[in-house]
Length: 368
Ligand code: SF4
Ligand code: SF4
Image 1 (cartoon, rainbow, N blue to C red):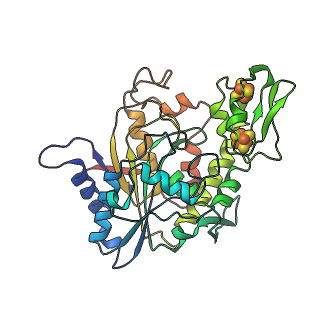
Image 2: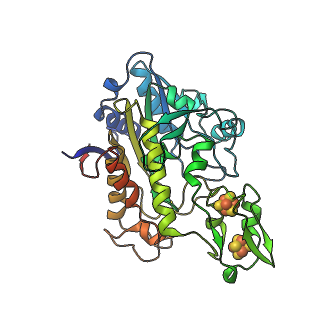
Image 3: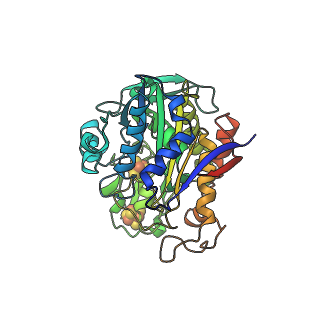
């Protein structure tokens, strides 16, 4: 049987605005039967890196919070600290940035609790039966919550093709150690011939793993943590990875972490994808390039695989926007993610998630 994915487009009028529509979407996924009185509800989102503007608007988080409160739950907003250079690497700067981006208690009506503590090492080992891992490291506050509501901004991603619910769970709920283990096989190399010695990668690398060797950039594999950031910052495309091997392993590892993040909450979870500001790269960058398709809407489901499949299909069904990162595949039905990241097979994450029993790729899209 197909999984149900509920879809709210962005049309609204005097009878129903978008926040009311989001509330109705949450009713479709039976939020009141998922949350019981006084349960702690982790609302997992990405607060956006400093300089990024594509993250979900705080007003929508407020609506989710209000709905949880109405069910008798105790909501808190959460995300885990990052691996790389940026403003979300420890809980203090992470909280400051979240507030700068509008996610204050006064705005959303719920506190923020960083999932993996002050320095990203507050985590719990979760046993799983995966191909890569037998245990994963998930942020403690997410493990200890009774319910998880994943509110993901759906956009493109350089290692997974797109980033949606599965990425919000797999990478987003992992502690620093967990993120590191997922990235451990991402070991880029510099093509010396293409390197113009601009030094951008050296300035960007969070662990000073890159230096000049005979006037060209060179990566020290011992120091590299595999964050893949240098691949995106090199203007010459001179930094590359073994795409076939790396992408498959990375996506599978991420899915095993998603499995761990949901363990014990299989019936206590709701997934939302906001298919708006569909930018060509993830919200971990300190900038947001123009959206590749018009804003589409919000989807909700109990199936983390079906919701990402449906979101990818909705993006690909749209007409692409000219003068964006899209090069060729503007037509309705054309694969927008493959156009931007030709080496990345985004279906790996969906296939592997389905194989592990996280959900189904087959879905019924129900427009509310
Ligand atoms: S960013 Fe690219 S071109 Fe610039 S130094 Fe690094 S590898 Fe070379
Ligand atoms: S060399 Fe590249 S992938 Fe490795 S840690 Fe530095 S920025 Fe990240």
